[in-house]
Image (cartoon, rainbow, N blue to C red; front, side):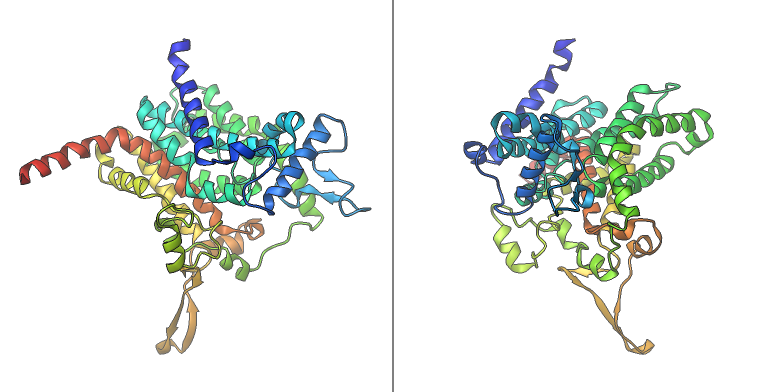
Length: 430
């Protein structure tokens, strides 16, 4: 039994070593320095120390600080409380100080993100090689590196998504009457997503709808005719309530008090992605980052670091080419649908190019400077709470999540087939 699961331990060690290497030289200064200078990282150092005082020293309550904005106090739910990402750093904060606690909490997000993707891919492929490739892609996405550099502990908490969608797919596809393992995995993971970021929770619910539609289209639409499907879905929802209640209660209370403002359409357009954000090298790229920043507008480089990666992109294309021959045909179809949806929604209420809104002149209609509306505009206008989301482009993260997953599936089913074809072409020309 130990031997059977030992590869997961080796994967965790691998991600730990790679995390320390990628974030070097932070390991030399992790008790007294943070990456990114004065910014959001400073707040999250304070937040970890606050949770330490609440949980280990019995001072105050988690989501309200009476000392800030005295005498009214301050509701910490005005931003992400990110318990799931911050709490792992609390014991280290007590032992080594809050700066060390913060840095270790960030490192843990890399390790857990890589390991959870490893688990997801290995669950479907039984291939450690495919799983380690997908986990490496996912843990060190330019998106994650950018938010690490910015000190966004909340948005760095990406470990729970692979486990959630693995559980969700298991609930939909299991032959068991009540797949308790999958139901608990999906429910707990969704709760942890809620305890990480309200952005992530809200967008996860939207993407879940797309994922389920994809399952009905590509795998089995008849599942909706089975009572067990509805009962399993209901049980999973009930199991998720405790953690979601903890996550949502302070935000709902703040919203009822008028503390969560609606964003304007202009603001939503300002934080919308350009198509180029997904296909051009990130500003942090060690070879081409500076050149890309000189060609493209990278004033929002932290939020717009949605580069899918050349290796991932090739594997996704191969997945599309070989989808019908793959044993994971349905999963690839679902993933591609999610990726396309996340890509389109991240573009915002209207089309942008190079961080600028695109306008058309239509003289035959007597109209000048007409924008090009996109589907997100409908969500912004009619979907509850959508207009409270500050950065619409963050939903583009789900395109990167499923690209890493598909890369793992393709490495096993499609990419290996591609190599003999390349070699045969080379040999035929020699």
